[in-house]
Length: 125
Image (cartoon, rainbow, N blue to C red; front, side, top):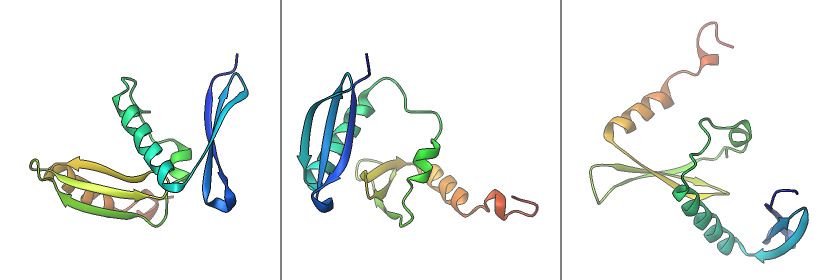
């Protein structure tokens, strides 16, 4: 028996998304939603996924790297609950994704972001 699948496609000239639920290779349900409803669904799914015991993949997959937006929106905020910084990235598909990090992690990230990439080093690819 085929596995259950959830997929999505654009509808209405890009103004709506159709969510398609398949059971055993057959369409079991469809739902057309506007951008705000879709964003709420993505956030809800992400919250549920975060509670699941199976960890995310160990490494970023090739498909995830290829889907990386080129116009990265980001913000840094003070965490009112403790000594952490909140780094938020705006993704056109996932919405805002936030990470809490210590000053040490923030410094390590800043260093990694300005370090030359392998192809920029002498003799690099």
